[in-house]
Amino acid sequence: MKKISTLFIAILISSCDILGGAPRPLPIQTAISSSTPVIVSATPLIIQPPTQNSTLIPSQGNNTSIPVTMTEVAPPTSAVTDQLLPTETQPTIQSVSVEILGCDTGIDILNGMGEVTNAYVTVKNTGTGDLPNLCSLLRAVDEGRSHPDKKVCVNSLPVQTQITFKLTVDTTYQKDTVIQVDATTNDLTLLRLDKQSCRDINLFGGTPADLGVVKPAP
Image 1 (cartoon, rainbow, N blue to C red):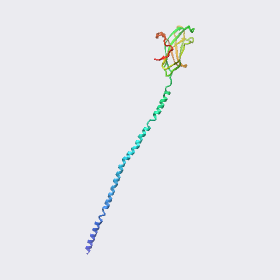
Image 2: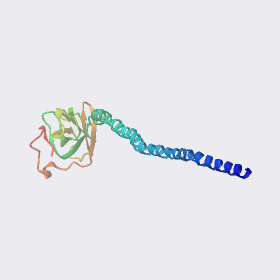
Image 3: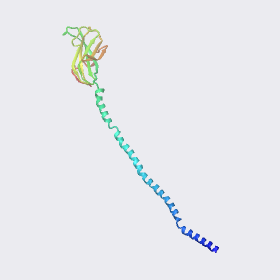
Image 4: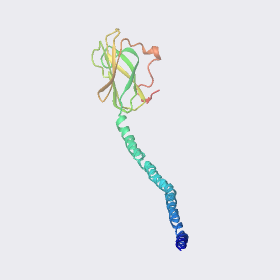
């Protein structure tokens, strides 16, 4: 009887294990849920490329700002300086060149003088503006009385033109003389030229035919 009861208990216990074995898969299924975070963690990787593109947009915005900061404002400033340059860097320059072509001598009876020396002088305007009241003045070392033709003037000598004057001074009879010529404009001396020995004008083609004529300079 004792053996029978023991066997019955053993059968009962074994039957409990079979019935209780069905719930065991539940803990195993709960372990599967732990793999779902892997799928969730993969989705942020798909979102990252748009964020990278969005980070490039500010850099494109910087590129578009570069043309705005380019020297578009510079041309007006350079244009202003270009307009100022002509008035500041191009002042009127007054300058002349003087050439003593030659001399000759004679007797001036009209003015009651003895021997006089005539000098033939060409004055050329080499400046950048007209020369008003241009005059040429002749002096001599042994000059006597002041001759009325020792200074000859023209109202204006334009740029790049020239004029030839005949200047006369009272000098010592049959004596070589040192002469000096001044070129002036409005009584301002532009050039002074000395000649130790003024050679005979006849050696250089004679008396110029265009005395007192303003003409283009060669």
